[in-house]
Amino acid sequence: MIAAAYAIPDILAFLTAAVMIVVGALGVLAVKNPVHAALSLILTLFGVAVAFVAQAADFLAVVQIIVYAGAIVVLFLFVIMFLGVDRFETVRVEPLVGQRALAGVGAVITVGGLIVLLASSHWVTGAVAVSTSGHPAAVGAGNVRAVGTAVFTTYLFAFEATAALLIIAVVGAVLLARRERRMDREEEA
Amino acid sequence: MNVPAAWYLVLAAVLFGIGTFGLLTRRSALIMFMCLELLLNAVNLTFVTFARTLRDIGGQAAVFFVMVVAAAEVTVGLGIVVTVFRRRSSTSVDELSEMKG
Image 1 (cartoon, rainbow over the protein chains, first blue to last red):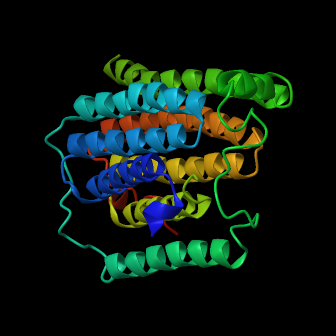
Image 2 (cartoon, rainbow over the protein chains, first blue to last red):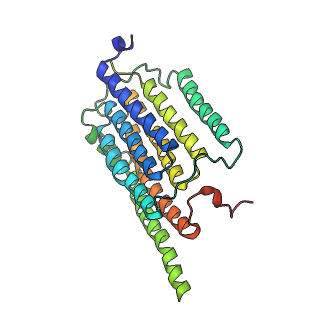
């Protein structure tokens, strides 16, 4: 019935993305070793990239892989290696009584609330399907050009602000990493 | 005919829920950061889905900015984790209790 209503490749793309995302996210949740958690995170990020491609956000899919899998996860792995891979927390111990159960209830309420909210408002837009027609900018043709045009015209100020933000973040990270060493030197002296 | 936007929105909601659960239960600051990335990705997926449904490129531009902010946040956050680790030899958030009232 579903196959009759929707194109098979679209369903396969969605299922691939869904399996990658959910399995990777559960992996981040469940594994003890932080390195394995980072690798599970990569699986989820690639799943999101698949979902982006399936929804014609080609540019964002590439950026997703380059920035997230290429930069952020590598940064995570670097810090994990830097701190020592053998230090991982014990998942089984539960220091606060009932914390895990309450967190589960909270997560279920969050997901249920989101789904009920979206469904009761006709998915906000009333649209029943992701459209393949319409403005070419948002549906694939010339996606990079469209995103570039939007970022450099409508959102130019925000774009410049992110440039400043990145500079501040880099300077802040360098300062955070340096301060301790300088203190050590002063203590030694 | 393409799959409904609802499928992707439910997938994003599930991803958000998993990330929330992880953020609330795990104690290692590193794993909590990874769960934070899951939350950001869930929101990004929602943005892209609505960009497609509403035929508005603004959603994809928003995802672009979320990614930039995520990169900056991870840079500073991991710098803080490294600094804390140097002082405490631990990344467990339970041991950082100096500021409790």
